[in-house]
Length: 222
Image 1 (cartoon, helix red, strand yellow):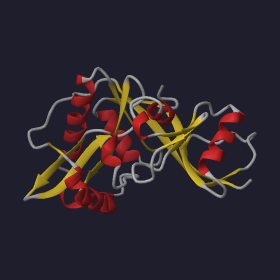
Image 2 (cartoon, rainbow, N blue to C red; image 1 turned 90 degrees about the horizontal axis):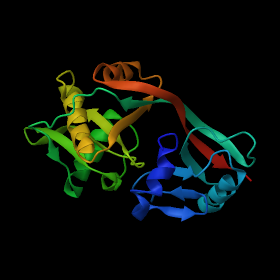
Image 3 (tube, helix red, strand yellow; image 1 turned 120 degrees about the vertical axis):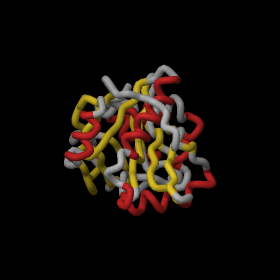
Image 4 (tube, rainbow, N blue to C red; image 1 turned 135 degrees about the horizontal axis):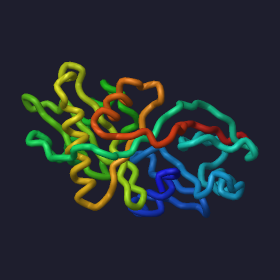
């Protein structure tokens, strides 16, 4: 399931958000930028993706487009890693509050300043997001993104630079994970392969490297 988490999310827990065309699917632009295909090795899936995306479109997908599928060119690609929870101490945090649509402007501002990864005005609809406030201001957050059956991805983990080094991000990861485990699911996450400090932190608190992957943007040229 988590070899192709976007597809299994769009055809599972997030099906109410999905636009599906044959063996290709996507989120609304304001929710997430991601597209997915049912089987990356199946040429017909990429034909469906081309029809879903439209001429000249750029799509964000996890994993490389196989070279044998013509018509797609690489616009940008970032090597990434996928980690899974094996021994994380998941627990609520007394300062963590559930964020709502009313908090989105502050969430977008925090994301803009900290760059944890894609986050859009309706990304909060993907799952539970928790935040920590200090003197009324949102200074740290983390939440849920992809939800393939049996799994939930932890994402948008970020802390205001003025509050880093205090364990806020780790506390929020533990708190989000606690909610995931209550549903009987297993937490997992992604980060850039070049982000060695984040990888070391996640491994230190109980995640294990599962596989290497890529995050890419591909352009339809034919």
